Image: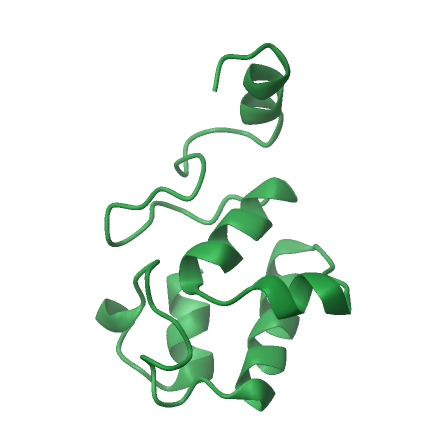
Length: 102
């Protein structure tokens, strides 16, 4: 995921941290946001509706939303896990949550 975000925004991968938001990354405008979401949808085989897209206001939000849809996005870069790490399958966290073991 980090590589895609960096590529779409034209920034160094080191700048792609979960706390990063559009106002903090100079190239992250509304057009690139849509382009970013489209690239991520294609890469991970998921789909976001308009309401979901508008709630994705940070790299961490995007990572969490992808994970909720079962995508393995790798480990977060600034210590915020945003969900599971890259080693779990999509079913494991959901099963733990259903059993109250988050």
